[in-house]
Length: 95
Image (cartoon, rainbow, N blue to C red; front, top):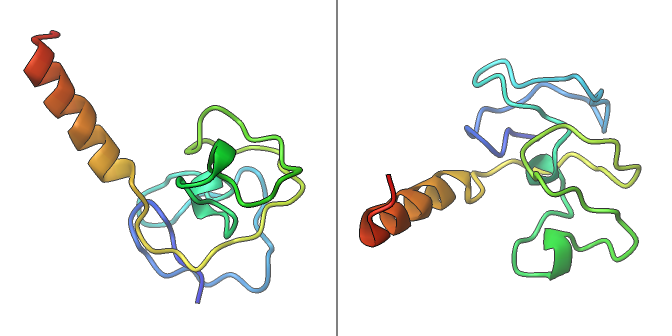
């Protein structure tokens, strides 16, 4: 069952019917974003398994990718990324 990659909320969406302006009813993050796509994978180039995708810089915002397919959800690395940035700022004394 599809789920939000930002908060893990289960989504009642049939097939791949996600419009560009669709948001998660739980956290209100954009659903048609790289993090919610089944092709999203931070371990590959451009963080996308689709070699012909034009990957946007911001993986959390809505985009116009024609290869978008809603994934199964599961929390991706947004929370840990924010934690790493905070830790790096603390380490290097950036305010």
